Amino acid sequence: MIPQDPVRLTGQKTIVRTFQRSDCDKMAAWKPHDDPLYAPYTVPNRTVAEWNEWFEQRVAAPDVFAYAIDSPNGDLVGWMVLSSLYPQGNSAQLGIDLNPAYLYQGIGCDAIRTLLSVLFNEWGFQKMRLEVCASNLPAIRCYEKCGFQITGRKWGSEEYLSKELVFQDHRFDNVRRYYRLRDNTLETLYYDMTATSQSVQEMRREI
Image (cartoon, rainbow, N blue to C red; front, side, top):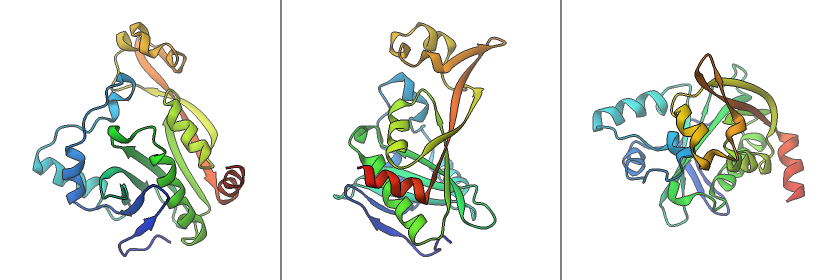
């Protein structure tokens, strides 16, 4: 089971700790994503009241466990959340978001590995799940390096990107196949990915 007390885990590149309300103020200072493919992950502008509400709903809820990701020098470089815990407490949904200034530095992989190690080896978890856009190729590679495997595929409505951007902008050339129009509505392909203690251990042996 996940401990209720504050958590602090040390990885090779990151420190994973319990998320605090003050971390919202640090997230608010993150710069937006430059790549339009990742624009949906840009932290929106929020008032103090809106941040308070977001924290209560997304972080402080009793069935949610959120963790800040710090660099060794104390910068907030991302955050992770565990949700949709099964009643047995041995499976959950993982979500992660990174500061755009720290992409492509192995930060996400290190943080996920650090958390998975404790989840499987100390907290009694047997399976972790996540959902990712098929167009997010760097994230998928990261998840696979951490021991996740694609276990399902489904199409869903794309709520942030326009069909004009996806089908006309050259920056989508390599990922356009992961989008489609259905009844003139833009849809994107999602992958369900799953990691088990065994898959994580096997991946660690390959590294």
